[in-house]
Length: 348
Image (tube, rainbow, N blue to C red; front, side, top):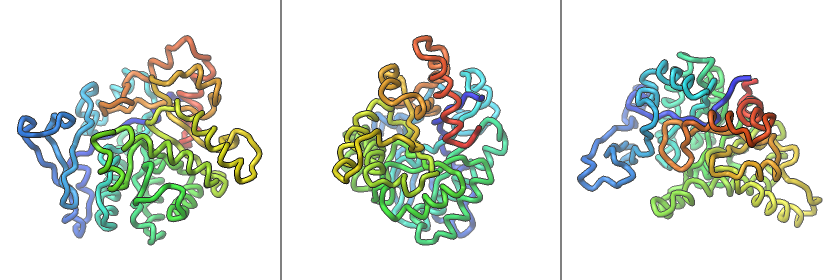
């Protein structure tokens, strides 16, 4: 089976928004460049910003350890060549800009998501056997299910293999009934819900960022893991897969224990609450993987490189490291690199 990088990224450029329709041009993000020596924060040494819906969004978290033309997909062949060099057969592509809140306006939200999705569809068409992607759903358009379904169907037909979500969306927890129509469509279409580090809550994000990026971006995904279990949401959608991306996996046994206690209060028998669920979690180099395999087994773990970024989860050589780690059972390594992500993303 192919070796799969379960979490790689693309860096958006002005071309990303070139797919907006004529009536959406007023929503088109504009890139601004500021002198890094003129007050730009250290986290944004490039001094680049997006102007979106009247607000500046820092264009940071851009790594320097991969070819620039491969990061932003100016040269898809360069991306493929580098994947070959680092031992990756397939990358699943996630966005960068969308990890934070961008707008409160449904029409702006739809225009951004639609253009991004068509950009990734074009990227996929240039290397359909090597590059797959998770779609950005226009979640503020949930009141129009037909509009949402049409977008999901287009993406599914053009290489999308998952649905991007953050730990909070539209100022709501992911266990909220607001998202049930999306989950029903995702289950029907065989598209997993991919909870990536990030948040779409202005109140939560603005309170914590930049003082604690870990709390702002990582903790919401961990909280959603527990909330979905405690509210028994997966039981409503038994054939839907869920992924928890770029938050490591060391915390999973703790949250499972807490969920077990809370479910017991509802009269459930004490058991592993993840048993029988289609939950997948990305591991990273900071995890004590031998211990983790003993605690939760090897059927639910995947791994990503965080390709294109420069943060605590980034490890461009992650696939090669794990493939060459002689301390881990070979069968487990194969599951993490091949079998599990293929099951999650429907790539088998």
